[in-house]
Amino acid sequence: MFADSLYLTMNRLRWIFGIPLALSIAIGILILNAEFTSAISHNELYRRSYLYYHAFVNMICFFLFVFLSSLFIPSKRKYAALIAVIISTALAGIGLYDTFTQRYSEITLTILINYAGLFAGILTGIYISYTIFKNKGWDAVKKVDNIGEMY
Image 1 (spheres, rainbow, N blue to C red):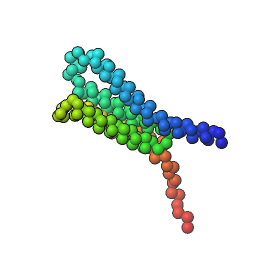
Image 2 (cartoon, rainbow, N blue to C red):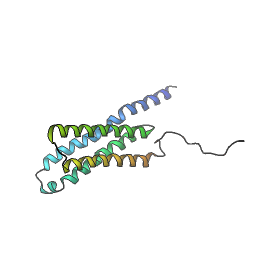
Image 3 (cartoon, rainbow, N blue to C red):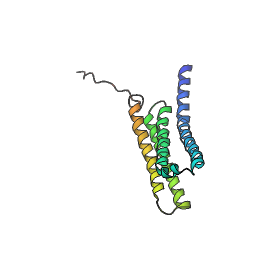
């Protein structure tokens, strides 16, 4: 009895803290990346590969957010991935709103590349999560083999 209630409590805690933990890891990587790029922004190689680098970092961070959300949640991992996609899309919308209201009035190549990396990371995270967890709690429904109909 006690073991069952402890198991349910741990699963609830994993649901409560799993997605924010995954988000904090992804945002932490983005912050570390911002600190790193401010230190090397004078480098000529960095200036030439700026767009590719930021698209790759955005893709990795948002891939990790979706994937780690699915990894940290105990069951029905597709709902965790869906919640991560909704949060990522909301963050992208807030970022676009902030970009167009305070900084820019037109779409530039940098903005397109950054958000393309973000959405590529979301799609990659969904695909990899589905591939890894399709038999390990993606739907969390036990499938019963059809042995035959009883007459």
